[in-house]
Amino acid sequence: MKRIVKTIPPRNFLNWYYHRITEPKKWEDLLSNPRCPPVKFDYSKTQLRTYLFLEQSGICCYCNQNISNDHKSKIEHFLPRHDNKFASEIFNYYNLFLSCSGNAVRQKDKKFHCDTLKNDKVITLNPSKKKNLNQLIYDELGGIYSYTKVGKEAIEKLGLNNPILINLRREIISDIIFNENSEYKSSKEYKQLFIKIYGRPLEFKYQILQVLKSKMNRRDYLFIFLFEEIQELKFKLPIVLKILKNFDIYKKVPKYKS
Ligand SMILES: [Zn+2]
Image (cartoon, rainbow, N blue to C red):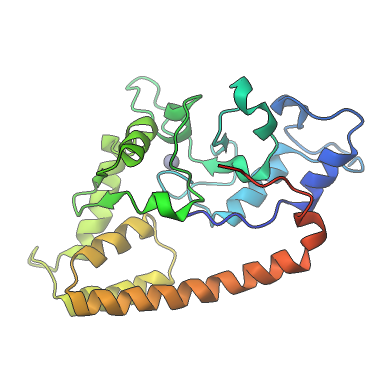
């Protein structure tokens, strides 16, 4: 599961929240679509979905498959909105993510995953918290494993080893891991592939990169470790600048606590 970096909430979402006569309490208080003609301080789920879609670079927050910016993608409350304990988190931007449909369209075989399977269950592994995400291990057959309780719980409650997802991941990973004779490549080749794939859009990219790392010798692994640290710094710098520039609205927003 790739980390979803949450930046700052959409300014218009905050304007909508703070300018309502009565404080919004239910998710239904947020309109599905913008009104026509537009009304001042209005905001809608469609606009919020677009913002989350861009923030997540068009991937599902849990299974990381490519998603579309339309009704098939679902705004997910990490801490479930139907649970009264988390009523204060319903409009907390740091509790909101975008999930795939979780196979909801194929209701007959009931092989649900992601938000559709999770529903109102609570999990500890938050897609925006890096330290928990390291608890998931990826293999070349498309499987995801964990040695920890938190990791196992996430895999089970999100259906991350749903056969449909495993097959999708296995197909793309085996195309990259093996050469034309179905043999493993060299550590150096995996290192070069890692660098080549790192900056490109590719479905299940995060999972592929983890498998590539697992195939490297110690020297190449160390090189990739440093490479990733440098790339992450380059990625974070513009986000830090954006937050500093918008600090006036950022400081008003309650941060996600746990
Ligand atoms: Zn998903």
